[in-house]
Length: 188
Image (tube, rainbow, N blue to C red; front, side):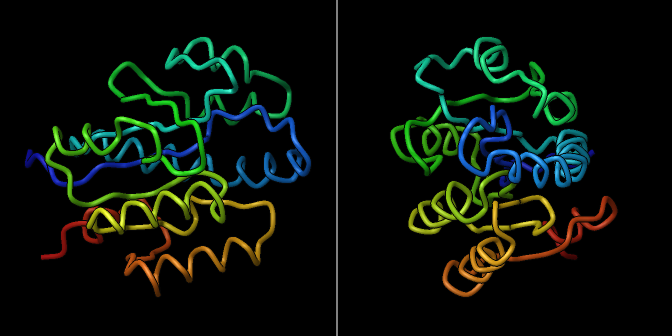
């Protein structure tokens, strides 16, 4: 099997307690994309594309996956966490602010993995995913965004973020389907 070392999947803020204004709305929209993200993750893992979870730290300030999972676990997110919970094969980083690059070791990790292309998935599309895309673009990463793998509280805000990533950051936007990912990443 061909190993694809130049791409990585970033899963942003999917481990979430949704305890904030409009959290119930975002939780419902996150549940809608969780199956797509899980399927995308499985496909990337099969193709040896690194999977990197980037997550808020919830004032725990520890990159301790089990502590963050325990802190976030509640009735709003149980089904989401069951679908997308990281495995020991995945990378896990915490972030202090919106962008996955700000104050994290992400850029260094991506360099170590020889990554030049990022698939972006997660929440919120108009905040953390968009800010991450912007910082990735400034670092000259190619961007691929499966539009049905990101969600925001407001659908219009989500569409705006997708348009910005496409028009300003030259992201390749597509609708994820299990049989399309490799042709999208690696056209013949």
